[in-house]
Length: 179
Image (cartoon, rainbow, N blue to C red; front, top):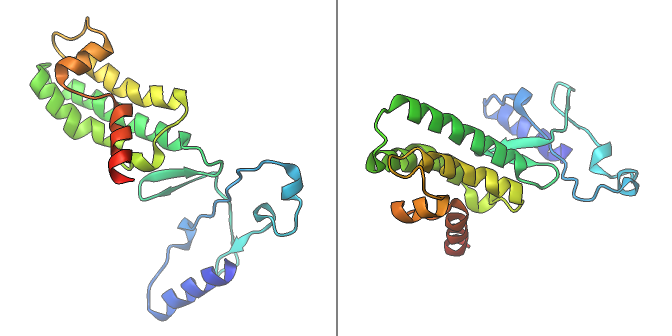
């Protein structure tokens, strides 16, 4: 891998391209946490990669690639946290910026501004932990509760009245269609 990194840096120099080497990241997947594997001489934990100026690239626990957070332990909790945080921020802004709570306006705002944050690349990072599934579903649950005339209904009744599917069901449908 070090030879590949060196050849990319050399190629960029030959073609007058500047690479921002401070942004280089390396992540080691650690699906097996037994200490005996880490003691082997070729273990990724024992090897550092170096930039052209001699600085080592420090390993990261999470890396963002194309807007999706990858975690070294193979879980998607970091991505779920990021998506939920961004969706909550946009939902809060939407609810404070628009006075109307009519179903048509609220659903248009939700579908165009909020939901894309929890559905971006969701077939890749679809949560499997119950806590993560619940955190993602809470976005839609909280937003639909704010719609005029639906506050006293259960979440499932609100979905039925609005003609929506749960976010979990939508991810399942995406997976079936795309995979």
